[in-house]
Length: 345
Ligand code: KG4
Ligand code: ZN
Image 1: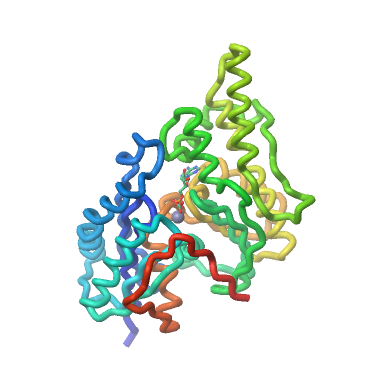
Image 2 (image 1 turned 90 degrees about the vertical axis):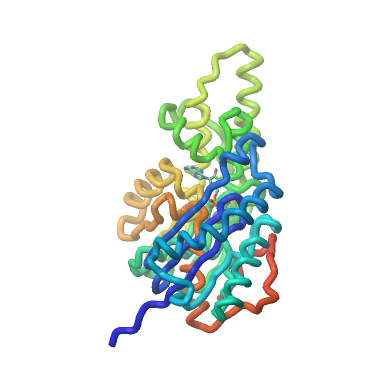
């Protein structure tokens, strides 16, 4: 008789999205619910940690019920409870961790602690298509920009990371300066479609003399601010779509060129992209085009936009190999706001 696939409930509360999902066999999504708090935080121009925690508290339990219902499963059908325990906002993470521990204890199920960044990487496993290794994975989110070499699942080396602002942070800060609203990434993505990406030649920080694959985006952000100051002082008409399209082009070009260079240098069999900024339509298009010309034999894999941004299906996917290895967390599991990726080579 065929064995039933392992069912894992994933829980995600690291920032401003409350999320719960049921995933079968580490890659088949049975339900994946995200309750965004964006509207609540938008009026403050960014995430207010205290508001985020309180919202997670009221949203999490009903969302878990809904995720189970949508999956057509009951708590007794599950094999494990997985939760993101860092990095993120400590108060927000604690709500998910406490909820997951309570469920694991009450249902006598193993608890699996998941690194949120590693989960962004595992978003590429959802859907079930096999990944050829070694792979180069660009993770670009609100808090991180990381270029990783994945020799095989679980064996990760960091090739480069941001030295200042993360890519998503740069999007959000530029949108704030331009009074576009929060979160800035999707708003700039949309507005840039009407602009000319070659209108303003903003600087690209290649950091070539300093060893390759690191990123830096704070200079680009300052250049956008300076451009606006000068244009206003000279009484020039500011064409917002051109400004954001040129900013986006400068940022995307650096992400694309460094990822393609790393893929070539490390003979990657696959290039993977994930994290909230990987939902950006310009980045997706430019990466596709550049890969097609530079490395036509290497497939580019990127989850659909809704699996690039924070979700709980990726938490359950990342928990799956740990569950199979018996890597369970104890009930004294804590939140780790500054958790980094664990590199196993
Ligand atoms: O991965 P994510 O949902 O949360 C973190 O782990 O940080 O990433 C959120 C970030 C935000 O900075 C948001 O502005 C950015 O991803 N983002 C985008 C787009 N959608 C979300 N940036 C550019 N274009 C988008 N379409
Ligand atoms: Zn994230």
